[in-house]
Image 1 (spheres, rainbow, N blue to C red):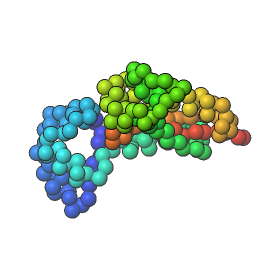
Image 2: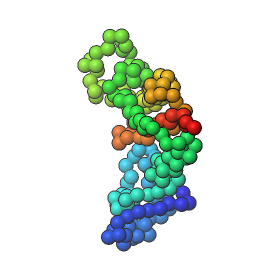
Image 3: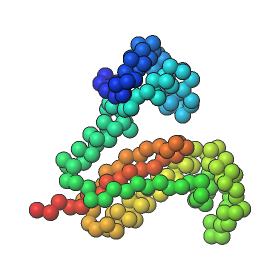
Image 4: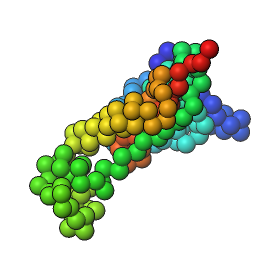
Length: 182
């Protein structure tokens, strides 16, 4: 990251400056690796720094600055979107996700009470690829069967970004654009 903007409250600046000066590039790289693997950051100075920051902006995927850039790119290419959707397939409640995870279930006659939430979550945690496949196929089905089939009218373009929730499962934000009328 060659261009990073950090925002903090004025009263916290001295503390933030001291924390930044105390950390090495290696400390920050290690914290980033831990975060990417969804592990707890173990450096107390990095944790304290993250608490004091209000915003970090850069071209990093998922950052506010990057999302703002993507929205500007979308508007300049296709005009203002008319519909914003957030799609959050709840895998731990879906019999299809269990099927992807290799659990032998009767899809035609499924009784969720036969599979406790703990058992369902455990199966999905043991099969993270199943969660990804389930998410991908649900998103594809919604795009193909809802957006492209015209549920919201004629479709000119859609633009989406995937984010991860606190429990590390994906959800998607999609902006839907109608044709530009001249």
